[in-house]
Length: 470
Image (cartoon, rainbow, N blue to C red; front, side):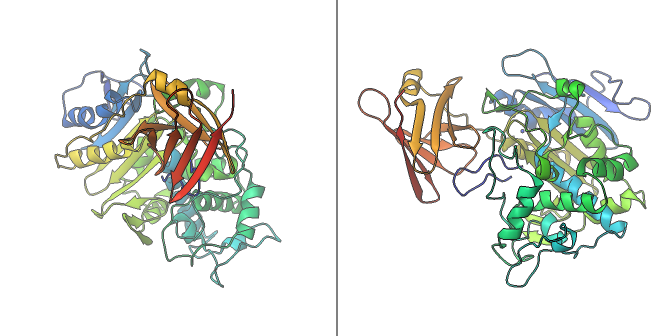
């Protein structure tokens, strides 16, 4: 799931090993430490550990189906500077991987005859509401799952009440209001634009059409029939104790939790065994019921710039690896399924970084018979503490306020209503780049004393903010 946007551009959208083999005689609940060595352990160590060594994430859990055996690996620690390791039961927000579950729910509704690919959004909206069309072309349900609806990544009427949780406080009424007032930017079904808005709407409409809430619909229609447990959106007190602490750029963050109508786009929480169980179900040759829905969900429907798009799934250019990644404000994840290789990979981390996807892809390649180099991670230089003191503060602009803070030797920037994001030094004096957004900030710094101005530079636009006196 996308983590933040700044102005007009959203982020699209993470050591010791404990291993167990999950078979009928040795289920995950009874792990066996240090089984006979296999190539999976070396591959996981090679490709995932660099994320921890570079302090992008404190740790994580990896699950792999390889040659008919499921193996699980815990990596690093639960928190930076801590000594407690994650376990196989540790929970993680899986972000936009949730879009695959929503795609399967849609495919299952088609199998049941409740909707078709071409059902119009208008047909499922409450009476009296009409979605905007594009010059007479209306949005169909398949446009939503393939990110070709013409609607943007996120609705413009977001009014976050918590800067670390950009969708918090958003309601279904606000979502419906948006699509009934805002025309798609292009003809539906013609171009790809990744859209949390569209997939959130899809899950809400399909579930409500079935007379159910979204979370209950996916559990009852998707997870339960395949015997997969452990997925949830609303966490009880015991589950809240099991979720890994959220981190972003080395600092503590927050889990996003329930985000209402956007839950179908990115809010499932799961452990590695639960997510691998779902992935492995997609390797099954069982027929009928939910397995027919899984097969339909893997049908390619649209070509994007980086591969084909199915019902939530992305199909890699090799034509056989179905995958998706995810990222929220404190977690990043990746999973992939290759039926030709009987291979499935799950990577869950409690740190926000695109490198989780890169490392996961390389792990799939390694287990698929290639020998890729580990991902190269450039560790940003720290910020001099005395320099940080001079720029930390609150800056007021015409459109927003920017807050500059420093923690653990790093510099962070946040603008009104959005998340706190790390910025790293560039080769130019007093200029810093965002690590998760294509934008930079630049300080106006006198020879002595505090910075007087910070300027956001993004998409050719310049937004100057004046420092407020302490």
